[in-house]
Length: 183
View 1 (tube, rainbow, N blue to C red):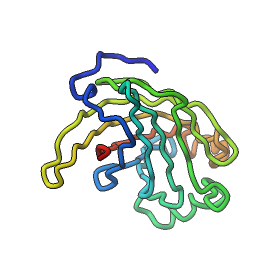
View 2 (cartoon, rainbow, N blue to C red):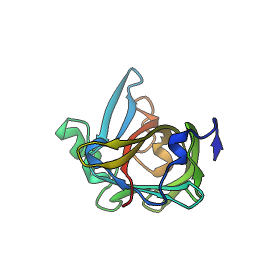
View 3 (cartoon, rainbow, N blue to C red):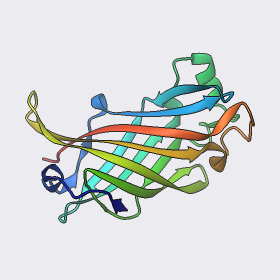
View 4 (tube, rainbow, N blue to C red):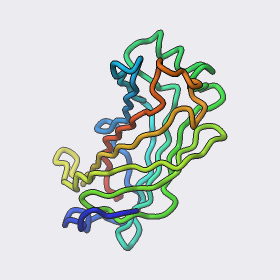
């Protein structure tokens, strides 16, 4: 983990414990090039996160994405992507990400972790922009948020075969996550 700036006052106020996902204000999206000329965008509608802050203010991060929730807004394409030709959700229902050690939250920081799809685990690096901690008036809860981006190679995970010229190997992942402070 590499900090690229000093922690702000917001990051110093992280309450220790397990912060809950605010799914209504979070998203997991991706972008992949098709035919090398345009980008196809989509996301996953079901996912869980882990964000556990220790007494020193460092956080352990994790996520589970349910691949059957793959959605590009095109039902025929989405059904095909869920088959054994691509994601094979019958045999590989989830994609997980875990940071092996706690990271210090700062305005921007890097999280080095491991992504697992079926029997394959590969290193993945996420660049994170911390949004801060704010009170959420309607509920009185404190919320924290961050944006994270990274890139994976789909063929590293056995997704879709080589397909030169059809689909790029690089898949950009974009996370917008909002969390609720532990009680």
